[in-house]
Image 1 (spheres, rainbow, N blue to C red):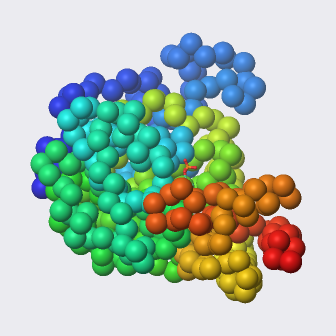
Image 2 (image 1 turned 180 degrees about the vertical axis):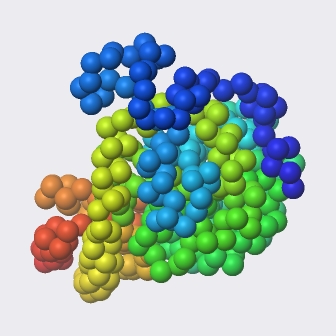
Length: 342
Ligand SMILES: *Cc1c(COP(=O)(O)O)cnc(C)c1O
């Protein structure tokens, strides 16, 4: 498979916007090229369009080269860019598992690309055969979220690998929750698969949802196209500076706490009389099947506890999705739920 053949022709020949800062690499100089204000207030200069400093921190953390990293305004920017780079509006189609993250379909719809949603198996396992059978010559993107939102489970790497090897387009593996999983994820084998894009984010385990930093990892060819199509200054100076500081600090013990809390919470929830099933989770949330999801949701809201009602989602009838909070928050959740049981 040639990746170049999958790129939309207008994108292949795109002349990207060039910034003056692309031509001069130095940090010190008299910058009279970009019509900025010369008076320093910390933010008077345009940001680095390639986020070199941030990428130099991420590369060793993730074990990939800087040229294999794209940083976007949240993962959503990367998802949208992939549609714009690989999909011909009105003609191409994309494939995704279902239930899964809602943004894949929103991005497909805004780009006039038909999304073929393939239900997971009843046990939430990956329907490898059906995903591959859904592909035709107009299929460009295939989305697998692992660990999956909202089901919480990670798929075995061998199964994902088979999809990547056999799908005749780009496979996007969304690993937003990989830091909470014992699965290794796809990054260690990224270089073996030219049609693989791995999405991660600083929004979850790294605690930077408010900063909006989504990460994509792929071959330098794909990353090159993403850089050409993105807005030149998609990551602002303040976001970069704060993300650089937080990434330089020791890895927070928060991940360990969340994983321990997740197991404790799952155990207690399973003992409640109205809980039918707590699904195993590789993420920082639990999918919980209860007797009457809508009634319980309303009860929790009345007690100022907001969870996500997934009752209307395929395969998730009767389910609420609960994020694992601090130990204090989880205790409060359990107390309120125990009162419901009475
Ligand atoms: C939360 C989440 C993301 C992260 O999105 P950002 O835009 O990076 O905050 C990505 N994918 C999935 C499946 C998520 O649940």
